[in-house]
Image (cartoon, rainbow, N blue to C red; front, side, top):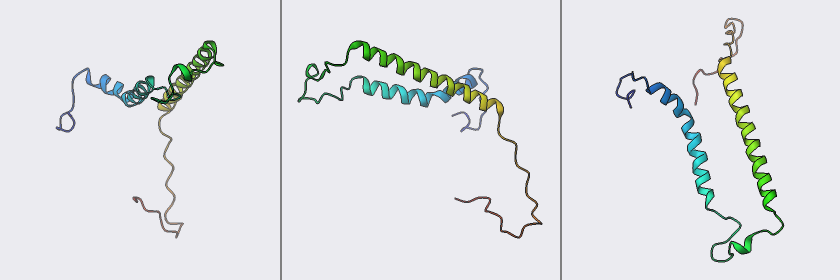
Length: 116
């Protein structure tokens, strides 16, 4: 909002908040999905199949807990790997620019500099 009005923000809190705001779309996506799915029981059909009737007798609480722990650990490891890779590539910076080709040696047409 400040940039749209032609002013540069000078408050000390602005830049840390703006930097932290980069993660907000990812958090909003994840939290929205979690809250949407928390109340669902996709294996039960409303008005047709009761929740008590749709419980699987062959799946124990231990196997559900084990799969929950395994998936949580797996996603935790993937999140750490993703964070490490993002920091590594951010520290490395962009690749060096390529040297321009000599224009006098080639008679081929140059590609458009700007195209849709």
